[in-house]
Each structure stands twice: as structure tokens, then as C-alpha cells.
Image (tube, rainbow, N blue to C red):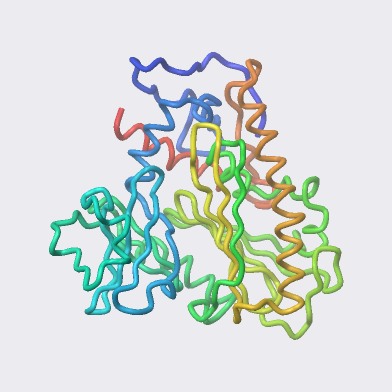
Length: 354
């Protein structure tokens, strides 16, 4: 993004959040969201209510709830929720605070949430993953993700059969939107990710968008590269990166069948938790799968994390307030129109309550 200095300052606790200056629906003419939207506590509180309480939030896997009576607890930003598989084999979710004993419900024999008048939470599954939504009126997850999932299955069939092999978390000193912005543009890869550039052929870069999704795809360019070795017999030939509004991304990398889930969890106005999960055909990774894990965790993630935190530091500068999007739809690997799509969704959500 091209930086511009203008006077678009944070609001006090007594002022409404104004529409972002010069933010347009057409990316070619739009400025970015103002810097204070990435640092201000009032904006963050608004995001909790208008974005995270109203959209689909990844919480776990169907395999964790494979048998009736199995249960797990989770948190949607600051709202505690538990998900349970009923004796009728149906998944249900409830607010945990509505029943003071639910912190230990997994230890209660014959526990039936309906006996306690618990307030329900919407729950749906997607490629073997469990999502919840605190908004009873939100669009169905299957509807907003249908095209994205179809594309993911085309690159890696039988995604639902993959099993969790590795979980990894990392605290990050950056606003959650900083993480999403970075993951939706690819021009930083040439400088920040030299080994990734050796793995993928960016001349084959494609990007396409749904209403609440974005997908990037590229072909593997070099079997013997510095990231990890790829076998010509491996089933996944092209990488596809998919993003689901607001904060969940899915990676399918060249190699054996695989799925990476990346959740960008907001923990404060200028802090996030990177939550990564890696799925393979078996729980124990093969040698090549372990090489992919090692590269991702020890090289790719640290490279991006340095970018997140450097960008966040720059957003606090008195010399920067807003930028302009770099748009080149003929060269999508150099374009930010998909970042503009994300920021438009953020703007619309925040302004809906102002």
C-alpha cells in the first residue's frame, strides 16, 4: 500500500466512529482503512460486536465430537461457548455462562443441556471442521463457503478424511486485520519469502473472490527446492490458499494430501494469536510431511510474523494515517483488490452500527 499522511485521528470514548475518509467501493479509487482502526480500543470493541459476534468462528474438528456425549469448550473472542454431540448424534452449541456448572459439564453423567434452558449458538461443519456463530440471523456457513470448498476439493479431494497431525500457536504484536491484509496480498513474497518463491511459480498466480471468500492458486515450480522436497507422484500439484471472512484461512500445499488451517484470533487492539493446525492422511506425519511442517513453522511463519509486527509498528507512526491500494487486475500477484474486498467488509460491519 502507498502511504499518505492525512488527519484522520482516533476517536474519544464519547465520539462515534466516522466513516473512513476517502474509502470507496471501487478499489481503484479507494484509500485504505485509517491507521487508528488498527490500534484503537473503541474500534476493537466495535469489531467484537459487529464482526466476531456475527460471523462464523472456527472452534475445532468433528473428530473431537465423534461420539454422543463428547463435548469441548471454546471462546469466541471473549464469549465462552461449548459444543456437544447429543444422544441423537446432532451437534449443538451453547453459551457457557448461562449455566454456572458448565465449566465441568464433561464430568457430569447424562448431561442434557436442554434441561437447563441454555441459550443456543449456531453450529455448522465444513470439511470436517466445526464452526459456531453467535448470530441467529447470519447467513449459513454452507452457503457462503460453497464455491470456496468446491475449489479446495478440486485441488485436494477427500479433505474430510484428513486428520489433525500438528497444532501450533504464536502470540503476535499486531492487530488481526494486519495479519489478514498481509495474507491476502502476495507481492511481499518476492522479498519476504525466498524459499516460497522457489517452491511456487508466481507466473501461474490466480486469484478469485466470492462474497465472503478469496482464493489464490499457484503451480509448484520446482520439486527440489529450498523449502521442502516435493515428489512428482504427490497428489497435490498446485497450492491453493483460501480465506473465509473474517479471520480463517486454509492452505493446501504441493505434496501429499494436506490442509493447513490458520485462524487469526484477535486478543486486543494491537495483539493477535496465530492459531495453526495441520492435517494429513495420518496423525503421524511422514518424512516429507514433517519437512513441510518444519519449513512452515520455522521459516514461513516467522517471516510473516516479522512483517505483521513491522507493519503494526508503522501504523502507530504520526507520519502515517492512510494509504492507497495498489490495483493491477491484469497482474493479480501484484494487486490489492482482494485486500480492498476484506477492508470493505470491515468498513460495512463497523458502519452498520454507527
